[in-house]
Structure formats: C-alpha cells, structure tokens
Image (cartoon, rainbow, N blue to C red; front, top):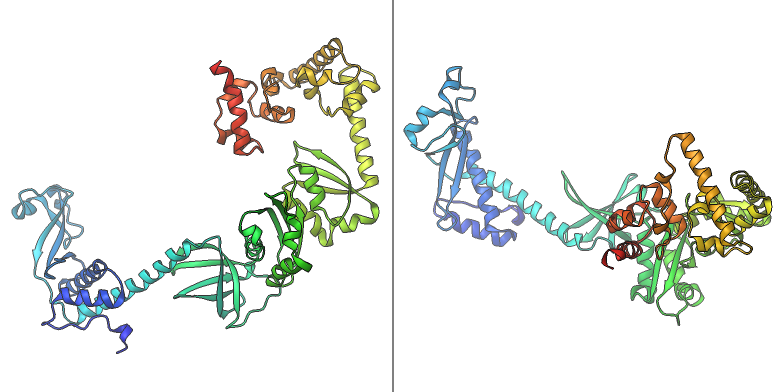
Length: 508
C-alpha cells in the first residue's frame, strides 16, 4: 500500500485517539477534521447495520477516544399520528417520547442511546475515504488562500496541458491555474513544458474546488509588465493613468510623472527602446504606444490620437463626445486599421471620439452655428451679430443664457447690465413658453442662481444637476458624496468640495 493511501491501519489494540493523532501528523490536517470524518464513517456503518432509514448521531470524546451512538427521533403530536406516521423510523409521538424523557416537546429532536458498532474494517475504510477527501479539500483551500493574496499580480507557470478551450498551468506547490482561450493572445501556441507569465485575475470556487483564473489579454497585464521593466513605475515615481489594448496587436498607455525632473515617456521607452521592447516581446510582439497624460481632456485626446496630428477638437460635455478634425491625407492614419487607433484612443481617454476630415468638421461646425444663430435670433429676438457674439463666447443653449451667473454675460464686450438683464428675461420667457406648451414647469429643470454662483460650480454641471432635480444650493447640500458621484463625472474629492461649499451657509 502506497504511503499516501495509508490513512488508517486499525486494530482493537490501537486506541482511536492514537490513530487520530498519527493521521493528523502524517497528513497535516487538524485532529477535529479527522474526528468528524470518523464520526461520519461510524454513522454510515451504523445505518448499514440497523437500517438506512434511521437517523443517527455519533459523539467521540476528543480526550479519551471513546464514542457513543444516539438514535434521533422527531417528536410529533399524537393527533397527527392518528392519521398515520409518515416516517415511522424517524418519528415518535409525544406520549411515547415522554416515557423516555419528561422534558420532550413536539417539534424537538429526541436522542436515545443505542448500541455502538465496532470501529472495524468497514468503518475504517469509510473513514479513510472521507479523510482523503478532507485532505484534498484542505490542500486545495490552502492553495486558494495563498493565491487570493496574489490576485492582481503576475505569476509564472509551466504549461501542463493544452487544449483548444484552455491551457492548464502548474504554478508549483500543488497549485494549478486555468488560462482560457479568450484570455490568450491571438495565434499564441503553447506546448507542455513552456514557461508562461500571466496575470492572476481571480480565485473562484466551484464543484471541482478552487480554480485560479489567469489572463494575458487584460489591461492590468500590460501595466504589471511595465512595473517590472520600468523601476520608476514600480516605485510610483511614474504613474500609468490608463491603458487600452487590442491584445497581441497594439496597445496604448497614458503615463504621468510625479517628479518634474523625469520624462515619463522616455523612461518607459528606455535606452534605444529596450524597456518597451521587453514588454512587447512578452506579449507576442504587441506594439505599445506610450503617450503623456494630461488633465485637460482635449489635450489628452490629442496625445492619444498619435501618431495622427489633430487640427481641431469640438467637445460636447453633455454627450461626452469629441469631434476630431484631421487633415484629409491623415484620415486613414487617425482611424487606423479597422478603426483600431481611434477605438484605443477612445478607450484610453473615456471619451467617444468621432474622426472627421477638416472639411467635414468645418461643415458640421457651420451647420451647428447656423442652428444656434437661428435659435438665438428667433427666441431672443436679436440680430445675427449678437447671436454670433454669444456663440463665440461659448453659449450653446437658451438655458445657459438664462441661468449662468450675471457676471459671465457682463464680460462680453458691448454688453451692459441692461442688455444682459433683457437677454436673460427673454431667454427665461422663451423657456417658460416651451415648458408650458409641453405641460412641464420650466423651473423643474432650471438651476437656481445660488447653485450657479457656488464656488467651483461649472454651468454645464449645474444644468446637468438640475435635470436630476438638484436645482438649488440646499438640494446639493443635502446630498452625500456617493450620491453626487453617481449622477456626475466628478471624483470623490471634487464632489466633497462642492457639497461642503453648498453647506457653508448653514454654519454662518
């Protein structure tokens, strides 16, 4: 008998306590687990001897190793029993139960001592199977616990088995992981014995036990490789703000330095491109574009569109889109093969990008300007010069004219307080008329003056909040930070600042 299968060698002379201690030391699992396994084996042996329909509990004394067996009965009402006992080997009427125990009650379980079976060969074999399973489960759980701490890190494994659907890797220490086909690089072939570096995504538990899930296509894999190849990234001097991949073909990362003396792009590229080339080689020749991060979304998009040169950008914050104009001869380069360049740039920046030629962009701008000029001239009853002046200053809707702070309109050349007041009144009247026609109160989506004048508040944000029913400063003050981040693009810090600014008048 092989050593690993030798779990229980029992005789009448060997105390049960000694057997448990021996198996515990040999297999490295707790004595309690073994006691529970032996109890389960004794229950099974007892049922085989007295009938499988009975309910049994075996209790082993952890100190002496002696054990007692109890038969379990569900106590039922005598009236129910008159119609016939459904489970005669498991149920006992109350009147009979009281003869055994004066405290018996309906609905409780009555335990009565019964003769224990001998812990012989059959019980030992059953216990052996249970203990072996417990050992395997304990080993698997130990492996899972170890690797749960490594989720989000790179691991190295040796290919153990390869199929069309997945690759099984041996990570050492009885740990196996699965790399599914969809998480592998395109056209990547692997043979048993190959060493492979992967990103540990998760540890999941199913009927087969814990499974380590790997990936070579996720963005995090690319970031972790740069942490290895570029010391400045690993040390936090350079930060990878965002990444986008077309796995195995092309990728983009946006980098930012926390030390003004360091060029983040140059540091990631390395001497003669050595660092980025090492990352590319690990990913099957995947081409990696490294761009400079910018807090200005428009500038970030321009950087992300490299190597295409952007001539102009039109930003629509409400729709979270940008129209990008490029020269006619650079259009195919800006879009990339099968739209790859613009798709990766969009994923990297988080904006929906529309690439246009210079002529198309100009035509679209002219159409939009004509629409605004017509709207302003008709609704505000002004001439085209005033309408064009408003458009040049960035006003794109009647709501902005009606509800932006007074000072913004007064900054426009030639506008005095009388003109501004009249324009605002006309805009509000037009909005009111439109709202009444649709059966909706205009104030329901119009931000109040105290919200618009709040320090740090942008007019586009105020209009967006008003559409969500947050119209006044007090409405904003009553929100929690999580509430504000859920309905806006603000980060937690900015949201907290705005909410505190809205609450400031409460403490004056």
